[in-house]
Length: 71
Image 1 (cartoon, rainbow, N blue to C red):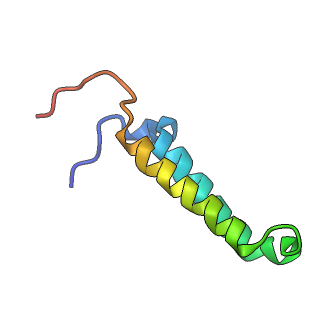
Image 2: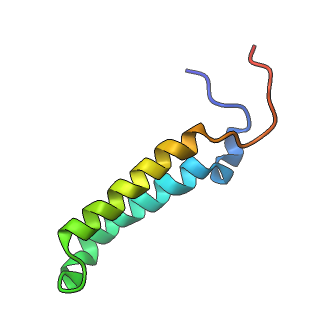
């Protein structure tokens, strides 16, 4: 498997940023959700997570730099 060119700057990619946000929400569900259960229903959490996952799919399709020749 070849890494994308410029992989050391991956933190700039929208899909990486959204993936980290989704991972943060997963961590928050485990640690903080029991404290917030009265304010945030499981349905609302699942809907937010689903919307973020769909945004991650779209972010993978967005062109984020100049064309580079594939060798």
